[in-house]
Image (cartoon, rainbow, N blue to C red):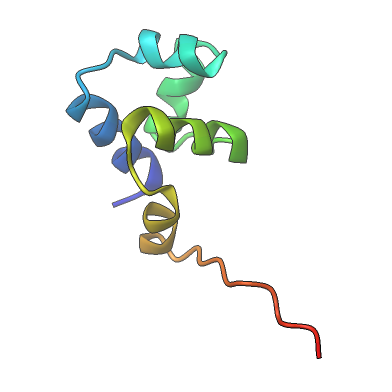
Length: 76
């Protein structure tokens, strides 16, 4: 399942409207709609805030979509 669809499911599980979340994100409902339909990607800031709003692990969502983050290499 793509990132946008997972974010939409997370929003719906919290029983929030697109308009409510868009206002919390400081963006338009249309922008959120485009993110949820995978027509555009959220910014890192938007993604982090959605994780807080929806109480989900966005790193897990990204990882499930093949986007992994690793700790930086340790200095010798």
